[in-house]
Length: 159
Image 1 (spheres, rainbow, N blue to C red):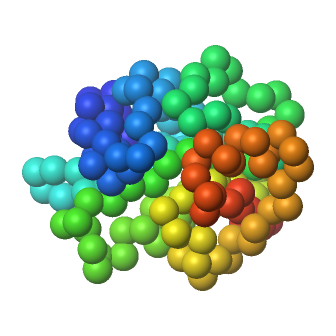
Image 2: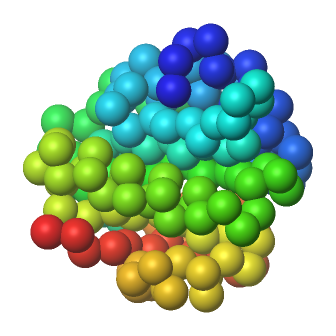
């Protein structure tokens, strides 16, 4: 992903995740803080999707639509902030391709796990990719509540 992709990435996010709106500055900040974990899936003349990620601490995801300011010094996982694919990408294997790129980014950063918040009834998909539900403490449960009833914090061991 490059800064030139940010507007299109934001537009795709608004289409794919309308219930979870985020300011475009969130995308810009994630890219600026950790470009090694931000990817696009593109066709000849358009983007088909993207993945945004950054180092984080297990069990402590950032709140939805919030700025990080900086990356945590005690990071122990790669947090998959968002992944979104357009209808035109269906059947192309781009979700798995983006996940493979995220795994490689985590390994290059010596982070042995990837964490995410599953939403929109996607828990089964992420479980099929090897992610497991992480038991939430009170603070995590409160953050997850803002994502909806089906939200789950999930972790994939990749080390």
